[in-house]
Image (tube, rainbow, N blue to C red; front, side, top):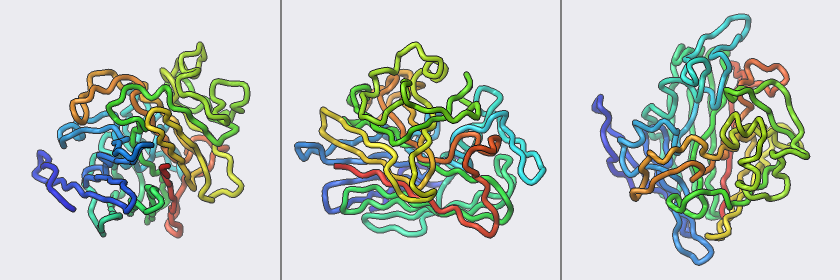
Length: 346
């Protein structure tokens, strides 16, 4: 089902599409930012629970600085100094993070544009966007196709397909905030989290990776055994203090570079909902909603306070173009950037 969701100041219409599977899951997506506005999952009693944070209206998303539910690009996460060098040429990007770094694609990233609908049926929608050469400082015309599919295994499958006509960097992700007890249920600190990673990338005070790839063993970042999100989040740890909680990239354990494998499992005791996150990407940014400040009024008049939701942003590592020891995000004209992420619910 397709409906009008609102209109931007420039007169462009924004539509909302409803998806469903045959097992009780429902999802809504808008063409602005490719944003997932709701995702309803059956809980342990068979009741529908909307597990994603968001707004009831377009105005909320247009003014949104938290990237609720949005597609992110051309480069998800941060680039230090808002610049990188590719083939000997330096590219300057927007300094939209702390006045000196680049975050989530810039001032008008993919979360702030209208995506075209290429295909739609009751359980799937395919969106496309042409990011032009020079947009937000990035080289090359980049054509992106993203497909959301809600299948009968209770999986939300997100497939990304991108190609360029010039060498560029590409790191696409999705920025949904989850709370498996419901978007309006308060903080998510009692959720248990397992992250399938032996290493993470420490950052400086501005959340830019230092370049170190550090073992999680014996640290507050070891989630190899399911652990409550809130168990160590307030510890006197420099990394946690810098970010106000968790806002870091974990280097996922992989047998092969591009296999679809388990990144994380999240357990909610109240609803009984379990979510597996699987991805072909080498990393996942686990973010605990540290910057939610209680001033945001979301769906159903819910007030979103700090740590009321968490993100599992599957990705390449932050600031990879400036760290030769990180997996490369360079995309050349003779290549395709093909990645997949699955959120599976039980």
